[in-house]
Length: 383
Ligand SMILES: [Zn+2]
Ligand SMILES: [Zn+2]
Figure 1 (cartoon, protein in one colour):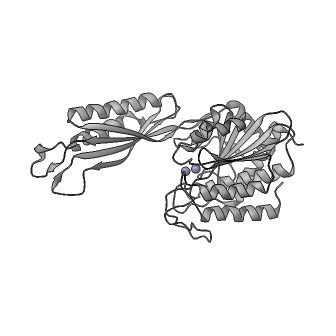
Figure 2 (cartoon, protein in one colour):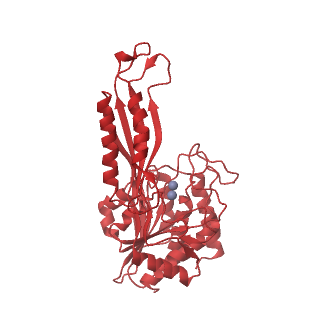
Protein backbone atom coordinates (compact mmCIF):
# COMPACT_ATOMS: atom_id res chain seq x y z
CA UNK A 1 0.00 0.00 0.00
CA UNK A 2 1.20 3.49 -0.81
CA UNK A 3 1.80 5.79 2.18
CA UNK A 4 1.27 9.54 2.23
CA UNK A 5 5.05 9.96 2.06
CA UNK A 6 5.11 7.73 -1.07
CA UNK A 7 2.46 9.90 -2.68
CA UNK A 8 4.32 13.11 -1.86
CA UNK A 9 7.59 11.73 -3.23
CA UNK A 10 5.97 10.23 -6.32
CA UNK A 11 4.11 13.48 -7.06
CA UNK A 12 7.34 15.43 -6.77
CA UNK A 13 9.08 12.95 -9.05
CA UNK A 14 6.26 13.15 -11.64
CA UNK A 15 6.60 16.93 -11.67
CA UNK A 16 10.36 16.64 -12.08
CA UNK A 17 9.80 14.44 -15.15
CA UNK A 18 7.29 17.02 -16.40
CA UNK A 19 9.89 19.80 -16.07
CA UNK A 20 12.39 17.93 -18.26
CA UNK A 21 10.64 16.35 -21.24
CA UNK A 22 12.63 14.48 -23.90
CA UNK A 23 11.46 13.54 -27.39
CA UNK A 24 11.11 10.03 -28.84
CA UNK A 25 14.49 8.32 -29.13
CA UNK A 26 16.25 11.01 -27.05
CA UNK A 27 15.13 9.88 -23.57
CA UNK A 28 18.65 9.69 -22.05
CA UNK A 29 18.08 11.72 -18.87
CA UNK A 30 14.57 10.36 -18.31
CA UNK A 31 15.84 6.77 -18.59
CA UNK A 32 18.68 7.55 -16.18
CA UNK A 33 16.29 9.07 -13.60
CA UNK A 34 13.99 6.04 -13.89
CA UNK A 35 16.91 3.62 -13.47
CA UNK A 36 18.01 5.50 -10.33
CA UNK A 37 14.52 5.29 -8.83
CA UNK A 38 14.34 1.59 -9.66
CA UNK A 39 17.72 0.87 -8.04
CA UNK A 40 16.34 2.20 -4.75
CA UNK A 41 13.63 -0.49 -4.94
CA UNK A 42 16.22 -3.32 -5.15
CA UNK A 43 14.61 -5.33 -7.95
CA UNK A 44 16.17 -8.66 -9.00
CA UNK A 45 17.46 -7.08 -12.20
CA UNK A 46 17.48 -3.80 -14.08
CA UNK A 47 17.94 -3.78 -17.85
CA UNK A 48 18.87 -0.56 -19.63
CA UNK A 49 19.29 0.42 -23.29
CA UNK A 50 16.37 -1.76 -24.39
CA UNK A 51 15.38 -0.87 -27.96
CA UNK A 52 17.11 2.50 -27.54
CA UNK A 53 16.73 4.05 -24.10
CA UNK A 54 14.22 1.54 -22.68
CA UNK A 55 14.56 0.49 -19.02
CA UNK A 56 13.05 -2.56 -17.35
CA UNK A 57 13.05 -3.79 -13.75
CA UNK A 58 12.40 -7.43 -12.91
CA UNK A 59 10.97 -8.40 -9.52
CA UNK A 60 11.48 -12.17 -9.49
CA UNK A 61 9.78 -14.20 -6.75
CA UNK A 62 12.27 -17.04 -7.28
CA UNK A 63 9.31 -19.42 -7.76
CA UNK A 64 8.09 -20.76 -11.08
CA UNK A 65 5.12 -18.83 -12.43
CA UNK A 66 3.96 -16.42 -15.10
CA UNK A 67 5.75 -13.20 -16.03
CA UNK A 68 3.53 -10.14 -15.88
CA UNK A 69 4.70 -6.98 -17.62
CA UNK A 70 3.41 -3.48 -16.92
CA UNK A 71 4.36 -0.82 -19.41
CA UNK A 72 4.90 2.96 -19.39
CA UNK A 73 6.42 5.31 -21.97
CA UNK A 74 9.49 7.56 -21.59
CA UNK A 75 8.89 10.11 -24.33
CA UNK A 76 7.35 13.58 -24.54
CA UNK A 77 6.18 15.70 -27.49
CA UNK A 78 7.50 18.57 -29.64
CA UNK A 79 4.79 20.93 -28.34
CA UNK A 80 5.35 24.23 -26.53
CA UNK A 81 3.59 23.92 -23.18
CA UNK A 82 1.11 26.65 -22.20
CA UNK A 83 0.24 26.06 -18.59
CA UNK A 84 0.10 27.96 -15.33
CA UNK A 85 1.92 25.43 -13.14
CA UNK A 86 5.12 25.60 -11.08
CA UNK A 87 6.47 22.47 -12.82
CA UNK A 88 6.11 23.87 -16.35
CA UNK A 89 8.41 22.34 -18.99
CA UNK A 90 11.88 23.89 -18.77
CA UNK A 91 12.67 22.87 -22.34
CA UNK A 92 11.52 25.21 -25.07
CA UNK A 93 9.21 23.51 -27.56
CA UNK A 94 8.93 20.19 -25.70
CA UNK A 95 6.38 18.98 -23.16
CA UNK A 96 4.85 15.96 -21.43
CA UNK A 97 1.35 16.59 -22.78
CA UNK A 98 0.45 12.91 -23.35
CA UNK A 99 0.65 11.96 -19.66
CA UNK A 100 3.70 9.70 -20.02
CA UNK A 101 5.24 11.39 -16.95
CA UNK A 102 2.22 10.12 -14.99
CA UNK A 103 2.34 6.64 -16.54
CA UNK A 104 6.01 6.28 -15.53
CA UNK A 105 5.18 7.40 -12.01
CA UNK A 106 2.32 4.87 -11.68
CA UNK A 107 4.81 2.12 -12.57
CA UNK A 108 7.31 3.38 -9.98
CA UNK A 109 4.46 3.37 -7.44
CA UNK A 110 3.79 -0.26 -8.35
CA UNK A 111 7.52 -0.98 -7.91
CA UNK A 112 7.35 0.42 -4.36
CA UNK A 113 4.45 -1.80 -3.28
CA UNK A 114 5.85 -4.93 -4.98
CA UNK A 115 9.32 -4.44 -3.48
CA UNK A 116 7.80 -4.14 0.03
CA UNK A 117 5.37 -7.02 -0.37
CA UNK A 118 6.68 -9.38 -3.09
CA UNK A 119 4.53 -11.64 -5.24
CA UNK A 120 4.40 -15.35 -4.40
CA UNK A 121 5.32 -16.78 -7.80
CA UNK A 122 6.59 -15.72 -11.21
CA UNK A 123 7.93 -12.27 -12.08
CA UNK A 124 6.68 -8.70 -12.22
CA UNK A 125 8.36 -6.68 -14.97
CA UNK A 126 8.17 -2.90 -15.06
CA UNK A 127 8.81 -1.85 -18.66
CA UNK A 128 9.63 1.78 -19.45
CA UNK A 129 9.66 1.84 -23.26
CA UNK A 130 11.15 4.58 -25.42
CA UNK A 131 9.65 6.30 -28.48
CA UNK A 132 5.94 5.55 -28.20
CA UNK A 133 4.85 8.73 -29.96
CA UNK A 134 6.38 7.81 -33.34
CA UNK A 135 5.37 4.15 -33.12
CA UNK A 136 8.96 2.86 -33.17
CA UNK A 137 9.70 2.13 -29.48
CA UNK A 138 7.74 -1.01 -28.64
CA UNK A 139 8.92 -2.71 -31.85
CA UNK A 140 12.55 -1.82 -31.05
CA UNK A 141 12.19 -3.16 -27.49
CA UNK A 142 10.66 -6.45 -28.64
CA UNK A 143 13.35 -6.82 -31.32
CA UNK A 144 16.15 -6.27 -28.78
CA UNK A 145 17.81 -9.64 -27.96
CA UNK A 146 17.83 -8.68 -24.25
CA UNK A 147 14.02 -8.57 -24.34
CA UNK A 148 13.96 -12.37 -24.75
CA UNK A 149 15.02 -12.61 -21.08
CA UNK A 150 12.01 -10.64 -19.89
CA UNK A 151 9.43 -11.81 -22.41
CA UNK A 152 6.12 -11.86 -20.56
CA UNK A 153 3.05 -14.07 -20.50
CA UNK A 154 0.82 -11.13 -19.65
CA UNK A 155 1.15 -7.41 -20.46
CA UNK A 156 -0.88 -4.47 -19.19
CA UNK A 157 -0.78 -0.71 -19.71
CA UNK A 158 -2.80 2.29 -18.62
CA UNK A 159 -3.09 5.42 -20.76
CA UNK A 160 -4.85 8.47 -19.45
CA UNK A 161 -7.79 9.41 -21.71
CA UNK A 162 -9.45 12.80 -21.23
CA UNK A 163 -13.20 12.88 -21.80
CA UNK A 164 -13.88 10.21 -19.18
CA UNK A 165 -14.94 10.74 -15.55
CA UNK A 166 -12.14 10.92 -12.97
CA UNK A 167 -10.86 7.48 -12.00
CA UNK A 168 -13.17 5.69 -14.46
CA UNK A 169 -11.67 3.21 -16.91
CA UNK A 170 -12.72 2.60 -20.49
CA UNK A 171 -11.69 -0.68 -22.01
CA UNK A 172 -13.03 -3.53 -24.10
CA UNK A 173 -12.07 -6.98 -25.34
CA UNK A 174 -10.70 -7.04 -28.90
CA UNK A 175 -9.57 -3.99 -30.87
CA UNK A 176 -8.87 -0.96 -28.67
CA UNK A 177 -6.53 1.18 -30.85
CA UNK A 178 -6.41 1.28 -34.65
CA UNK A 179 -3.38 0.51 -36.79
CA UNK A 180 -1.96 3.57 -38.52
CA UNK A 181 0.76 4.41 -40.99
CA UNK A 182 2.16 7.70 -42.23
CA UNK A 183 2.82 7.67 -45.99
CA UNK A 184 5.03 10.41 -47.47
CA UNK A 185 4.53 10.74 -51.21
CA UNK A 186 7.16 12.84 -52.96
CA UNK A 187 6.63 13.82 -56.60
CA UNK A 188 9.50 15.15 -58.69
CA UNK A 189 9.29 16.87 -62.11
CA UNK A 190 11.28 19.85 -63.34
CA UNK A 191 11.19 23.52 -62.39
CA UNK A 192 10.76 26.17 -65.08
CA UNK A 193 10.30 29.92 -65.38
CA UNK A 194 6.76 30.83 -64.35
CA UNK A 195 6.41 32.57 -67.73
CA UNK A 196 7.15 29.29 -69.51
CA UNK A 197 5.62 26.50 -67.39
CA UNK A 198 5.45 24.23 -70.45
CA UNK A 199 9.27 23.96 -70.29
CA UNK A 200 9.02 22.21 -66.91
CA UNK A 201 7.05 19.39 -65.28
CA UNK A 202 4.90 20.63 -62.38
CA UNK A 203 3.42 18.28 -59.75
CA UNK A 204 0.50 20.69 -59.14
CA UNK A 205 -2.15 18.88 -61.21
CA UNK A 206 -1.12 15.44 -59.91
CA UNK A 207 -1.42 16.66 -56.33
CA UNK A 208 -4.76 18.32 -57.08
CA UNK A 209 -6.06 14.95 -58.32
CA UNK A 210 -4.46 12.94 -55.53
CA UNK A 211 -5.99 14.85 -52.61
CA UNK A 212 -9.64 13.85 -53.25
CA UNK A 213 -8.61 10.41 -54.58
CA UNK A 214 -6.64 9.54 -51.41
CA UNK A 215 -9.46 10.92 -49.27
CA UNK A 216 -11.94 8.68 -51.07
CA UNK A 217 -9.92 5.54 -50.21
CA UNK A 218 -10.86 5.81 -46.57
CA UNK A 219 -13.85 7.73 -45.28
CA UNK A 220 -13.95 6.41 -41.71
CA UNK A 221 -17.28 5.11 -40.46
CA UNK A 222 -17.78 2.58 -37.70
CA UNK A 223 -14.78 0.70 -36.33
CA UNK A 224 -15.48 -2.71 -37.85
CA UNK A 225 -13.29 -4.76 -40.22
CA UNK A 226 -14.20 -2.49 -43.15
CA UNK A 227 -12.95 0.66 -41.40
CA UNK A 228 -10.52 2.68 -43.56
CA UNK A 229 -9.55 6.28 -42.90
CA UNK A 230 -7.15 8.42 -44.92
CA UNK A 231 -6.28 11.85 -43.55
CA UNK A 232 -4.21 14.26 -45.64
CA UNK A 233 -1.96 15.91 -43.05
CA UNK A 234 0.43 17.96 -45.18
CA UNK A 235 0.78 19.17 -48.77
CA UNK A 236 3.56 21.16 -50.37
CA UNK A 237 4.10 22.29 -53.97
CA UNK A 238 7.31 24.10 -54.94
CA UNK A 239 8.45 27.13 -52.95
CA UNK A 240 6.54 30.33 -52.07
CA UNK A 241 7.47 32.27 -55.21
CA UNK A 242 5.75 33.89 -58.22
CA UNK A 243 8.64 33.45 -60.63
CA UNK A 244 9.04 29.68 -60.63
CA UNK A 245 6.82 26.91 -61.92
CA UNK A 246 7.36 24.16 -59.31
CA UNK A 247 9.29 20.97 -59.99
CA UNK A 248 8.62 19.18 -56.69
CA UNK A 249 5.71 18.44 -54.41
CA UNK A 250 4.77 16.20 -51.52
CA UNK A 251 1.72 14.86 -49.76
CA UNK A 252 1.62 13.27 -46.29
CA UNK A 253 -1.30 10.93 -45.72
CA UNK A 254 -2.10 9.06 -42.50
CA UNK A 255 -3.77 5.71 -43.16
CA UNK A 256 -5.85 3.98 -40.48
CA UNK A 257 -7.48 0.56 -40.28
CA UNK A 258 -9.29 -1.31 -37.51
CA UNK A 259 -6.68 -4.07 -37.34
CA UNK A 260 -3.37 -4.94 -39.00
CA UNK A 261 -4.98 -7.01 -41.78
CA UNK A 262 -6.48 -4.18 -43.82
CA UNK A 263 -3.41 -1.91 -43.72
CA UNK A 264 -1.44 -3.63 -46.46
CA UNK A 265 -4.23 -3.32 -49.03
CA UNK A 266 -4.93 0.31 -48.05
CA UNK A 267 -1.26 1.20 -48.38
CA UNK A 268 -1.06 -0.56 -51.75
CA UNK A 269 -4.15 1.33 -52.96
CA UNK A 270 -2.63 4.67 -51.90
CA UNK A 271 0.69 3.88 -53.62
CA UNK A 272 -1.14 2.81 -56.79
CA UNK A 273 -3.02 6.14 -56.93
CA UNK A 274 0.25 8.05 -56.57
CA UNK A 275 2.04 5.94 -59.20
CA UNK A 276 -0.84 6.39 -61.66
CA UNK A 277 -0.95 10.17 -61.13
CA UNK A 278 2.85 10.42 -61.47
CA UNK A 279 2.80 8.51 -64.73
CA UNK A 280 -0.07 10.58 -66.12
CA UNK A 281 1.78 13.86 -65.49
CA UNK A 282 5.34 12.69 -66.27
CA UNK A 283 6.64 12.83 -62.69
CA UNK A 284 8.78 10.47 -60.69
CA UNK A 285 7.47 9.32 -57.31
CA UNK A 286 9.13 8.30 -54.03
CA UNK A 287 7.52 6.86 -50.94
CA UNK A 288 8.56 6.85 -47.30
CA UNK A 289 6.72 5.12 -44.44
CA UNK A 290 6.75 6.84 -41.02
CA UNK A 291 4.94 6.51 -37.68
CA UNK A 292 3.88 2.94 -38.35
CA UNK A 293 1.69 1.67 -35.49
CA UNK A 294 0.35 -1.84 -35.16
CA UNK A 295 -3.23 -2.14 -33.91
CA UNK A 296 -3.71 -2.73 -30.16
CA UNK A 297 -5.92 -5.73 -29.51
CA UNK A 298 -7.05 -6.57 -25.97
CA UNK A 299 -6.83 -10.30 -25.36
CA UNK A 300 -10.14 -11.59 -23.87
CA UNK A 301 -8.34 -13.36 -20.97
CA UNK A 302 -6.27 -10.26 -20.16
CA UNK A 303 -9.45 -8.17 -20.36
CA UNK A 304 -11.09 -10.56 -17.85
CA UNK A 305 -8.09 -10.32 -15.50
CA UNK A 306 -8.18 -6.50 -15.65
CA UNK A 307 -11.93 -6.19 -15.12
CA UNK A 308 -11.88 -8.74 -12.25
CA UNK A 309 -9.13 -6.67 -10.61
CA UNK A 310 -11.12 -3.44 -11.06
CA UNK A 311 -14.25 -5.09 -9.62
CA UNK A 312 -12.23 -6.14 -6.57
CA UNK A 313 -11.05 -2.61 -5.81
CA UNK A 314 -14.22 -0.77 -6.88
CA UNK A 315 -12.82 0.98 -9.93
CA UNK A 316 -15.73 1.80 -12.25
CA UNK A 317 -15.24 0.79 -15.88
CA UNK A 318 -17.15 0.57 -19.13
CA UNK A 319 -16.63 0.75 -22.88
CA UNK A 320 -17.36 4.43 -23.52
CA UNK A 321 -15.18 5.80 -26.30
CA UNK A 322 -13.46 2.51 -27.13
CA UNK A 323 -12.22 1.16 -29.45
CA UNK A 324 -10.43 4.31 -30.53
CA UNK A 325 -9.28 5.54 -33.93
CA UNK A 326 -6.06 6.83 -32.37
CA UNK A 327 -3.05 4.52 -32.33
CA UNK A 328 -0.79 3.28 -29.55
CA UNK A 329 2.21 1.04 -29.96
CA UNK A 330 1.48 -1.07 -26.85
CA UNK A 331 -0.19 -3.54 -29.25
CA UNK A 332 3.28 -4.91 -30.07
CA UNK A 333 3.60 -6.33 -26.53
CA UNK A 334 0.45 -8.32 -27.28
CA UNK A 335 2.10 -10.18 -30.17
CA UNK A 336 3.34 -12.87 -27.81
CA UNK A 337 1.66 -12.08 -24.49
CA UNK A 338 -1.96 -11.81 -23.38
CA UNK A 339 -2.25 -8.04 -23.28
CA UNK A 340 -4.79 -5.42 -22.27
CA UNK A 341 -4.77 -1.63 -22.40
CA UNK A 342 -6.91 0.41 -20.02
CA UNK A 343 -7.90 4.05 -20.58
CA UNK A 344 -8.09 5.97 -17.30
CA UNK A 345 -10.22 9.11 -17.08
CA UNK A 346 -8.95 12.38 -15.55
CA UNK A 347 -12.41 14.04 -15.49
CA UNK A 348 -14.77 14.96 -18.31
CA UNK A 349 -13.67 18.59 -18.71
CA UNK A 350 -9.97 17.85 -18.68
CA UNK A 351 -7.65 19.21 -21.42
CA UNK A 352 -7.21 16.80 -24.33
CA UNK A 353 -3.99 14.88 -24.98
CA UNK A 354 -1.34 16.66 -27.09
CA UNK A 355 -2.95 20.01 -26.17
CA UNK A 356 -0.52 22.66 -24.91
CA UNK A 357 -2.38 23.05 -21.60
CA UNK A 358 -2.47 19.35 -20.68
CA UNK A 359 -0.94 18.16 -17.39
CA UNK A 360 -1.27 14.70 -15.81
CA UNK A 361 -3.46 14.82 -12.65
CA UNK A 362 -1.34 13.46 -9.78
CA UNK A 363 -4.42 12.11 -7.99
CA UNK A 364 -4.53 9.32 -10.58
CA UNK A 365 -1.15 7.90 -9.46
CA UNK A 366 -2.58 5.79 -6.58
CA UNK A 367 -5.55 4.65 -8.72
CA UNK A 368 -3.34 3.40 -11.56
CA UNK A 369 -1.01 1.77 -9.06
CA UNK A 370 -3.91 0.02 -7.29
CA UNK A 371 -5.24 -1.44 -10.56
CA UNK A 372 -1.77 -2.72 -11.54
CA UNK A 373 -1.11 -4.12 -8.07
CA UNK A 374 -4.44 -5.99 -7.96
CA UNK A 375 -3.73 -7.50 -11.40
CA UNK A 376 -0.23 -8.57 -10.28
CA UNK A 377 -1.48 -10.16 -7.05
CA UNK A 378 -4.44 -11.87 -8.76
CA UNK A 379 -2.05 -13.50 -11.23
CA UNK A 380 0.96 -14.09 -8.98
CA UNK A 381 -0.32 -14.06 -5.39
CA UNK A 382 1.37 -12.39 -2.40
CA UNK A 383 4.36 -13.94 -0.67
ZN1 LIG B 1 0.62 10.83 -27.35
ZN1 LIG C 1 0.59 8.69 -25.01
